[in-house]
Picture: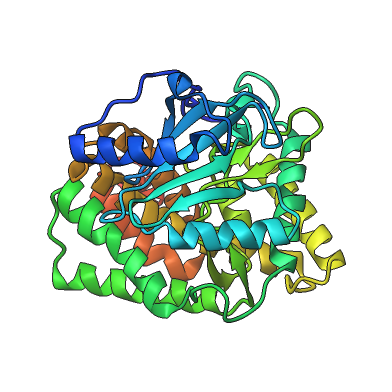
Amino acid sequence: MSPTTPAPSPQPTTAPVLWSDPERQAQFQTWLASVQTRFALRPESLRLASADASFRRYLRIDTQGGVHGDSLIIMDAPPDKENSAPFVQVAQLLREAAIRAPEVLDWQEAQGFLLLNDLGARTMMQVIDPASPPPLDLYLQAVDTLITWQKASRPGVLPPYDHALLRRELELFPQWYIAQHRQVTLDDAQRKVLNAAFETIITENLSWPSVYVHRDFMPRNLMAPSNGNALGVLDFQDAVYGPITYDIASLVRDAFLSWDEDFCLDVVVRYWQRARQAGLPVGDDFGVFYRAVEWMGLQRHLKIAGIFARLSLRDGKPHYLADTPRFIGYIRATCARYRELKPLLRLIDKLEGIEEPNVFGFGRSPGAA
């Protein structure tokens, strides 16, 4: 079995570090000098490690060896654009749950510089070979990590994934994908269809119990196990307290990688079995649970289609739009399975220029009445 239209995996980089703002560069150099001796840093080794869809970027710097390893990671998160406090909070929650996550070694809160331990250079996405069968063992390690995270859940710690937040995320689809990318203005009837679908999706999603939700739990944000270390977790700063169906939907319905339905179903079944054994509230009927995972995935895919359009059109990152057909495929497949979502499917098909065949006309003679 091989993935369908996989996205190319970002590779580790040793690119030099460039600064567009001389003042921020000076702030960085002052901060780096203040921690250099304490962590045995080698400033001449500084290089770009990776960047993501936000305004954060990550730098790698070598050390002279020591308790924290041969290299460390620096997060460059301008405080006027990125709030690092949630990252620090969730990193601590993950580590308290015995999950391999970055340890915050130093935080210059006022200027948005963080020094972290290095979980390695290769993500789960980067070790997957698209030409080979999907790595079930890696996915099951991710499942076990997810269950450990969910078992640590406590109410009142993370922001709630409530109706208002789910609705704001869904609105990214008409705002950015439909209006800006497709250049379509919905009429009143179409907007009514969209509103009704959104409310139905939200009601279904919120009917499930809440746990800690990573909110982007997928191979691109999971560090591959190495040197006897467990799988690691990154990019968790948007974590919330919400439906238990969300993160498993993210894992099997990836933003950048698609697998055959049978493999996805297998992973979800195994998650459900292990989650039940762990006492997590996933219900006693797998069919009901899988339906909920699909509906939760639908909310996520509508949101991400909007986000990727925004990244391309507003933030100058056009490569994200290349993955939107993946989301439209996910959205259409889910809508086609459930009667309540057929009006949304018809609307999506109209936006995408997809025409359903007239099955009633098949086999009729030219002169038939």
